[in-house]
View 1: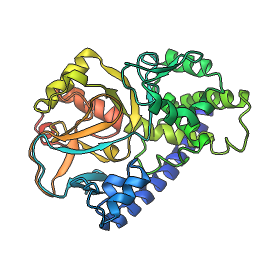
View 2: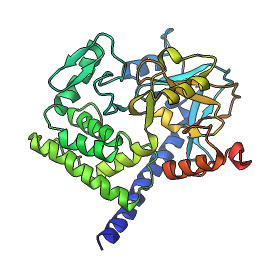
View 3: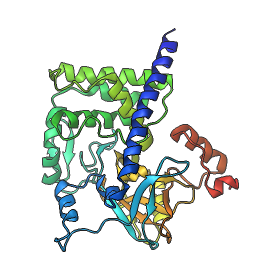
Length: 348
């Protein structure tokens, strides 16, 4: 009986969530007259946006050679507005929200995920920042976070092997501190959640909400923090979060795929992050673009080969060296679609 109720509630949630997302996509399509949208829809600072829109400013940054629009079969996509050469930097992007993995918390910056050199450390909470800039940028949301006892929440995530709730926790702290809006992720495509997944998220939500309540965070500041908000955020995070693997010395402009393979082999993941513009790239098992992280969570998108004007830019969501059936299973279960790229259609 309980599962039936949850299933019905889950279906209703999915209908509402997808309705809101489709509305966002319609607004996105209508706004394509602005060539800067695809870049500045991400986390570019307002001052930089103003400078770019100021035609009298000779030093204004050039918009990236891409635009975001709807595809015929894959929702939104990223397309080249001009020819892009192999190895060319397409754009960079800062995360909307990021968080180190539980195993990396004491080894990387608590904000940007940079591996430690000189650092500013909060000994009481066991987290560190790579420098004063990250410490200052984190100060407002971290003041909210450190009010609460997260031991039960972290223990649950650790025992269940969960990583995405950490991103939801940080986003909640950012919203409470005024650094983010509660609907920051609404434009991103949500995952389709099973009733069992929603039941698990209810346990996470209860632990999250209790941590804030026990820290005497006011009801007014937590007004947005409903079960529907939490499930909606996790639905977006699950399908749009990137696993951050720092390339560092492995990075090579001429051999991005080899660098990526070396990172997987070295298990170099330090955390996870959600971005705006990088989340609009669709998948291909033979991609023409690739995202790398050099020193921190700032994403760098490079062309893997020559790309023609009007061609869609695609990245690979998984390890493309896997055999065909394994790729299809992983993409279907993890991302909710079956790949129709040329290689998959040919059974390669």
